Image (cartoon, rainbow, N blue to C red):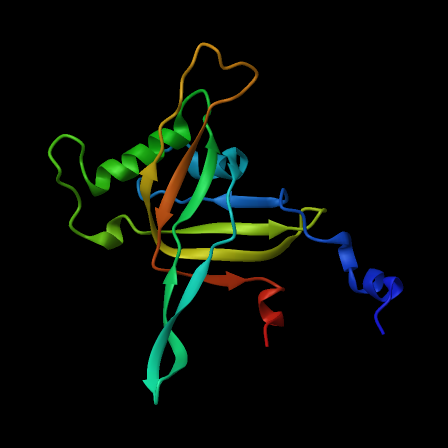
Length: 179
């Protein structure tokens, strides 16, 4: 029978905290600004990525028989703190411009030139890496607006970036615990 002592002994480490993470965005254009390094500090929010396995229904004598279908991957969104030099935002805008230019709607013809691998890592309370998700072949779908207002006080500019990617994999000690 379960009791509080059993629960406490199974709750090793006190639980994983949602504010213990790091995000690494890699950029296809090496511009020397250090934007990739900055993303670990300036990505203030994100998520562990989601995926969904679709359902295929086949009917037999009026009854639905459900089997697994194809897997799809949800877009991945991060929140970025804007730095004074706009280094991370500039790197993201340059990436987007590489894919499709603002002026004339042209861009690179090779997806491999702009696909990058992105990482989000869950940390424990001591900063040790628990599990890393690697988004394969990612690119920015949307770099959001930065809202400006005279009546905004006591805040720092942030913006969101939504990425599309091909699929994700996991690495780390928790990934090996899956049966």
